[in-house]
Amino acid sequence: MSQHSSVTITDVEAAAKRLAGIAHRTPVLTVRSLILKGREELMPNRVRFQCDCGSAKNPSV
Image (tube, rainbow, N blue to C red; front, top):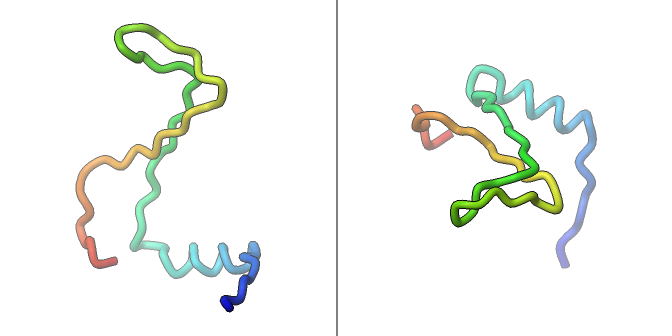
């Protein structure tokens, strides 16, 4: 059996410090409507897009 553990805010903050200078923040855009098949469609929930521009400089990280 696998053990499950909860991630704490301290874990997240520690990970952020380890990734500082390595990982790049990319914007997340939120929309309520999309153009589908030439028509604007209102989405029942917000749709989030992670905008990653360019390629990774070091894909092994």
